[in-house]
Image (cartoon, rainbow over all chains, first blue to last red):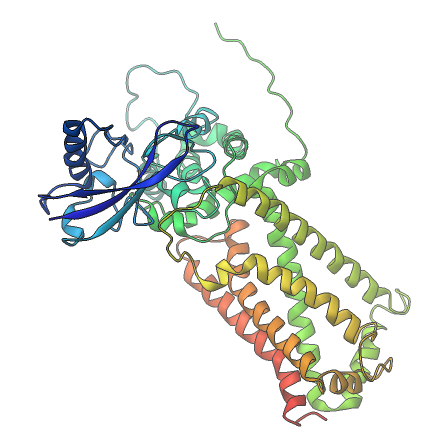
Length: 245
Length: 234
């Protein structure tokens, strides 16, 4: 496959950026999107140019590192992570636009790399259970209703990639925050800190400069892990309950 | 050894709500629902125009006597007006503050633009501004009668026929009621989501209710100017 790539190039956090056009050829439809970018970077390095900086780690769809907006869609046209997006979903001769996540809370570090440590600070404000750690507890010691376990698992799937923020017209982190709040608040282990967790995490989220939710649903459509939109309603319920107490 | 520290007291419920994006959105949801409830009553009241001048003029006079003798003349009406004014102000101020924040959270746009969300969702902000301006016109037209061509207090039927006899008044009402329909279509479901009433099972039913309410209110309100325009009410 021969492709035209228009990639956001930005030398540093404060440097101005712009879309730069590249031609790549000899791309196999079986390559992942990241392998296609690797091919481009090999060429750029051979020519003595700066390679395109992008985040990546596991390359098997579970770490959430590889975030980029492809043709205006977070992680591209398929509902998966960029590393699991294959070139067979594009056509020979296509022009593909590649941009970094856009949000005030996710400043660009270089090219397609953004600083997502705002997410870490939200997690640090309550996305855990304060309990002594040690050897794994006996699994039957704390009974968990099946429905609660299913909900917790569904929300624990969030990999913190930031696609929700990138897709949201308000750069809102509500889906990310709700995934963690719901995951822990439905479990008996999370119950003692239930109110403080949602209060602190919402407050941390607001402090990072993320926008609010206008219920456009773009986040849940972009989420590679399928965190559902009603999760935000569940977090709102938790927050209003905590605010009353 | 473990030590226990007393956790800090957290701020009052109202302060917590007003300071957070989630709480402020809840203020918008509650005030929106208050206005929606009022609109249902308002629309049903309007339909009395089809029963003739005596019916709707009598209904308007009765509205001023609600709660008597416990309440004085027009007291109920003024209580309702104050509640609505508070709702409009809180709804608008919250929307303004949240919108400023939302726009600041996405300072640079994507180069590759793509249509996002439904028409109703995308037009909430400007639709809200249109509705706000419409309310001002509507009060000047049919409450204070400042811009009404007939302008006879207590003669609601005649005032209605008078205002809808002008083409620009018809255009204003039709545009505003279409904006209202779109605003409710997204707003009702959104309020349920914001107040935590939505879940995977209820999602479809809530969206259907939102569409139903939007259609019902738009059609109900528009039936009056359309009836005057077509000569059914004269």
